[in-house]
Length: 487
Image 1 (cartoon, one colour):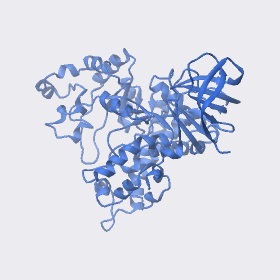
Image 2 (spheres, helix red, strand yellow):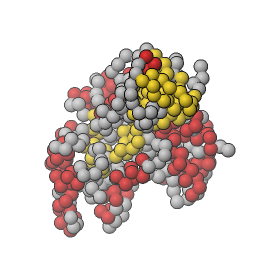
Image 3 (cartoon, helix red, strand yellow):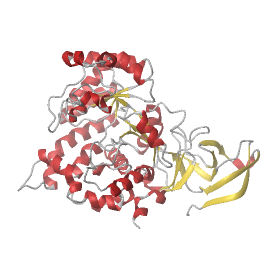
Image 4 (cartoon, one colour):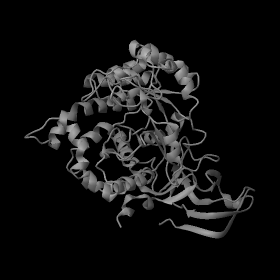
């Protein structure tokens, strides 16, 4: 049965005495974490808020409804939350990208998140101004952010020339490094970047977390400094005094051991640098310590996909990427980052075959897959985050990348219920917004999805979204697709 929106000017239903309601979803089955699937109920949305759930025609006074959506035979869930994204710019852009292509892509990106069901996102390294600008858009997922605290010369500051590093926005909350005493002594204001005063500055912002980095290098970046254990312990203590979690960028055995030793709340990447036969043991230790983990399995698969000759033939790309952007990505100029990544990969006769690249990634895939599967088996605290995009990588496009991460979770052993909870109430708790998001309950923000099939029964049912409701505003899913830009 097709859902038909009835935009009625004079529809009234019997309700308690609230101010004028906006949207009524009739006879829908509610699928909410921690509760059985409901019988058919009516859901009233007033403004941005879920105002009532139940048989609303049998109660109260007359209240006007602006829009009615017939939900019979459908399922209503919370909107999805991705707690690891990066919102600045267009994935894979370069100065060679035509301005018109870039502007169209920037305009589409919020819709691409929504098309795949993501109504809330957490940017893991940005500031208040970027997030404020994002949230001013008329139709976009609600964004929150984490304050990044890299050490001088460390990742990701190492991409910037040394003389400029501490004068860039990325270094606004750099972390004092006692292992570089001469640099700290020569840098005015460095004492304000010691753990306690740094945390005091961050808590005066809207940041939901602090992100630090344990990355010794990759590619042309070698022997990078990492924060000291004592400094991080002080940072964690100061942050926890303000109920502010601390997250760690890391993907190696050493990084995970560092997290276990310093009281870090979550490692925001899975394990792909380590020994395959040690991956399961480390996962067991992590699960036993209640250390949260974002596997971000699509990160290294996205790098591999840069060399997949069939990538642009995948039909789902057309839902997320504007046609002009796909055309640019396929051009010689658009392949710039693939060429850069290829520098460290095996080649035959000067060419990087997909098979050779697949072989080069085989060991990290094995380590990551074993580690993640064991986390699920041991009941570890696995958190959904896609790292969209992890770099200038067009294969990790907004919305689409999260959808692929969902598939990889299932392949790693996550049940439909585990995935459902991680995408909803689990991430609402990570954001400390469980009173606002994560379940379908009266008083919560009306970020909702209306689906043809129940996603608790199968993760593939997330593909049956028909309506995306953003802060109480219902939007037909097909109107969010990049396909609409063809003409």
